[in-house]
Image (spheres, rainbow, N blue to C red):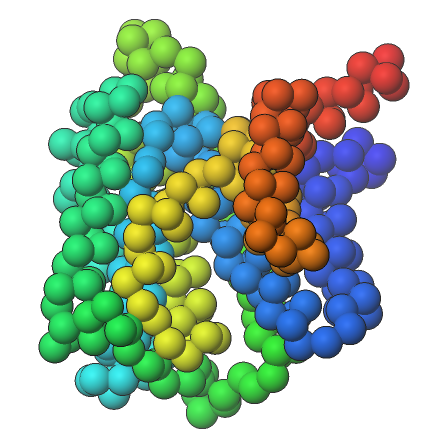
Length: 315
């Protein structure tokens, strides 16, 4: 039992569940609940992105595009075509998954900075389409979204949304941990280590790269759909380049190839700007200084470096 509780899939998931359960007792008002909900949604996207970048070693600088597509799919299908929100969410996730599958094979043949430029171009194309299709998406001004409902039940209040996002986050972490500890996860790590060696050992490199790309895109789409129903409005900035950079920074800060690192990175980079508001005009300067310090002294990311230090101290 003690060994099982020490594993990420059991002990780590239980610890995360406890944190989610007790955190509302320490949140004084709706603003803090709103920030925690955004932390959960960013963490869901970052977990999928970490599977792609941290475990498979495939960089993506356009993942906000999938987040934006999921958001706009739910917004358009519910507000324009009167679809049930849950059906719109599933349809958006399926559509994004098909798009990711269609573009994954040509994009995943690229490597290094060529792959980064390819995914960056994909994200920019999505952002431009969402901005230019004024009749469908509302253009740069965005569009309002109907509220979320499941079988006639409509969640209201930040506490209810907090539990919904918290449950989705736990489900996403559980799914990602099972992927990592399965033969698929071992194949992804082999691809990351050396594609040539993985092919020699019989690993279908292209298949696994496409698979993890689709999974990460679908997770981003689901998070985008939930986000847009919670906020009630969506703009093309959600699919923009800056948002993609924020997401990849969260992954790197928390720690590559660490599921809980993605959660920690999302929590820090979502809440840190709110904590630095007392600096006023120097807020971004302080934010940049903190990021530089972390990357210099903790180059592997917060969670892997901290875990390694604790192991060394225990020994």
